[in-house]
Length: 289
Image (tube, rainbow, N blue to C red):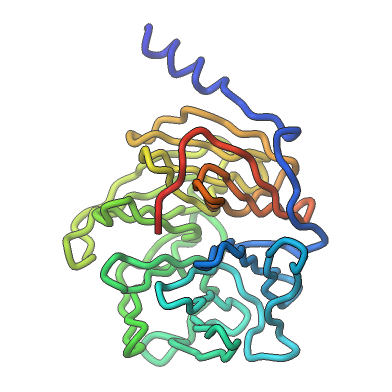
């Protein structure tokens, strides 16, 4: 009983919207935040057809569909060379965007068929790029997939199918576990990996109250932060999948989360009801990536 009371008290630990600071606004369904090595934050405007760069007084559109080969991007991630990778669900492809804004299509399908709606992506420590590819939304529509991509050769490998709208994706600090939000089933899956990044097993890591886990990120203590799209909160799960905190967000549609700042103790969120990006201070830093 004491443990149940303790968990309940932790669950009541909430941060209010007043603690959030708005860092960008007037975006059109912001998603997929990613940091470059110079401390600039990049955000997809899913419905606006552009990627926005947040960089102090010089913030503005980095690249858009009018001047480049992108269409509608979602998840973003940088490699160690400073290249930006994007899930372009409008084109059904995975893009590489060089610092000079040259756009290369790394992969646009599997076995001769285009991807459905590439959603989010993350690099394994071995340099392989993993990404989710949902299609229909419904807990009875298991047509989503998980892929692995060799960015050098463009070789694409199907790792898992029959998922119900796979969404946010993140690796544990040692890259031995891969976490994927299965939004339509209101849960987060944990895939145990071998040293090469192959799937050894899977299980349910956590269920999200009310459904729709979206973007995710880890802090250095192994806590997983998950945006509850439509629920107006960020849920924090400990290493055992137990909810330890609920952070109330400024709008009801937080879509993704990403740690940043000089000491990595600032959590940034994209929020789609207010079409803005916010930040909030945390006591535990995020992972170094």
